[in-house]
Image 1 (cartoon, rainbow, N blue to C red):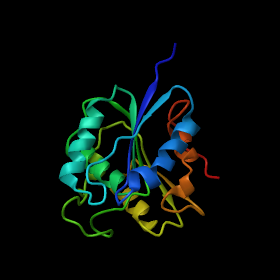
Image 2: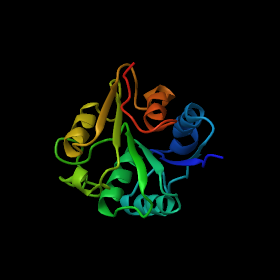
Image 3: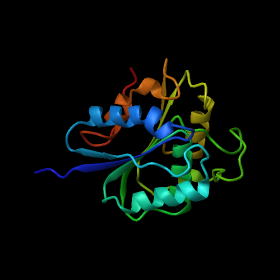
Length: 192
């Protein structure tokens, strides 16, 4: 019997994000991945006021509970904090992939913010050999699509996927993310 693959989905910030917004994304990912995947969707502390200290500690706790070969996916500010936490301290389990969805870039060229500003050498600090996927809707009115380009520069090994007609929630459809991380081996995603 094949082993169940784990996916950790880190929510975005804002009042009601876990139960009213990002639950649709985690449900879409579960549906698209199908059997053989366990999508974990923990509630982040004080979701209406994301703090790097609180969220990175919660994310590290969740990542430490994963098996080798797990995939981590973050949405919005959850993706920004996730990638920063992974760059700051490499995770214990060996990750299969890192996926950033509609992630605001905090730093030069992006949003100001001392608390979770991304390091200039972000790509070099991430676990080596782990594929990084950046997905961003071209109709995102929360985090400008130009932020995806900033991630592509900061993480040269990242595969960038700009999705026409998609908003900050990617229209609650993570089929492209599911194609990138399963059910076969990780691979580039054809744009639709």
